[in-house]
Length: 375
View 1 (cartoon, helix red, strand yellow):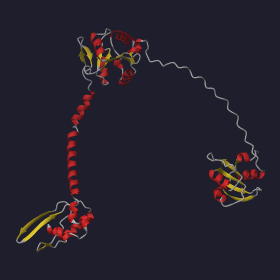
View 2 (cartoon, one colour):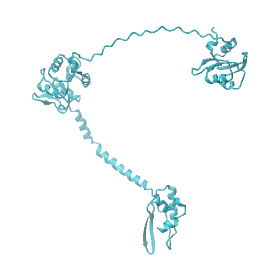
View 3 (cartoon, helix red, strand yellow):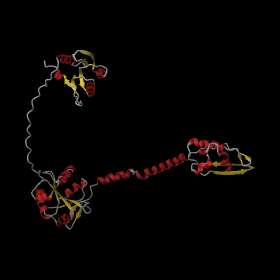
View 4 (cartoon, rainbow, N blue to C red):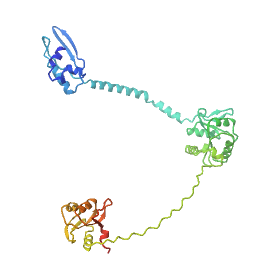
């Protein structure tokens, strides 16, 4: 151990000194295992480290440079550098594979279990009996807080085909005592046929039971004849008994005062084109430039100074002087207006003025529409 620390000390400064690295925890406990045989001693040195690869390689090379242990000559060879994170990662991956394999075996059902589960959902179930009158009832009646009261056994069977099991049947026009009792204890909805018989039973139920809602089959059809869609529509369209007792079969829309008829104001006449006094030379120049994407610069006497493309106008205006009027086939922008104000240009005539332009006090902005006289 003394040779390991002593012969590597100071080789690369304190940054890679084994003692300093152990103090900071970058080098772990160094383990040395020795075996002696026939006056020769061999063994292994294990140095755990959390250094980067370059620093680890330097430490390994410095340990290999040890040539004496005490009074004896010695030779150290690097056997291997092992990344324990890689080994740990392999153990984790192998364990994850094992967990996934076990999970698949335990969680994936067999084909027989799948068939059984599907076939069980297709079973309608058995109609049961309820109360002293042995009334037909669905198998889910006892555990349900919300129940459906229907007219007969066939209605219960049809509802069970649609997945509704919390049902009970009247089995006749006279309301049994069990129905009167259960409608006081549960939230009951009557699902009745859409014929005259259903009308009579509805009237009887409203008088002697505590049903909360009434749903009806389509007019002229019975609950036992309805498909699941029609039954769901009857349930969704159920009406509160409080409304039925007031003589309201369906919620009526609240009458509203008709909105006053909107009176369209007469279309205002088109404004006449503003008449602006423009010199004849300017009007002619504007007329000649329509559709050309070109510009002309005029002096105070309205004589031509420059004829150029619109794309070069802003740059050219910064270079010339004594311009009185600009005429161009384009849009008057804020940049053109600002340059004209700085150059004391009196008039700008163009095909259109940008909505974002803030006019300058000393620059007159005119469009072709006002500059070119109508023909």
